[in-house]
Length: 146
Image 1 (tube, rainbow, N blue to C red):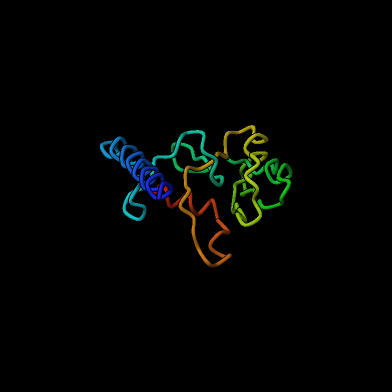
Image 2 (spheres, rainbow, N blue to C red):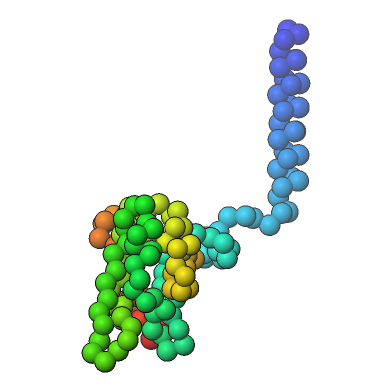
């Protein structure tokens, strides 16, 4: 009989302790976000996939030196350019990032001496197809400027 009352007392004490925690936390602001309808603001130091930086006219700062491609340990960057007739510099024609193999190490951003590559703040990347993670960064830069 004595065990019954001690179990009843300890169960009631446990219930009251839990209710006290609930009452303390109830007036606080919730920390969850209604995901599809709201999104979090990313911090400036967030490391998403890379993106090209454009100049005032919307052209890429990249001079097609290939340092980012050589610095990438994953080999996920492919870029190409051509030298137009009468021009002194190469012009970037394609910049492809295969995000499926990118390790977000930052070697490409560190190796670029021309401020042409930076980390993006995009974090909502979800898909069931591998092709959705192969980005044409030059096309994305042009779409941002239009």
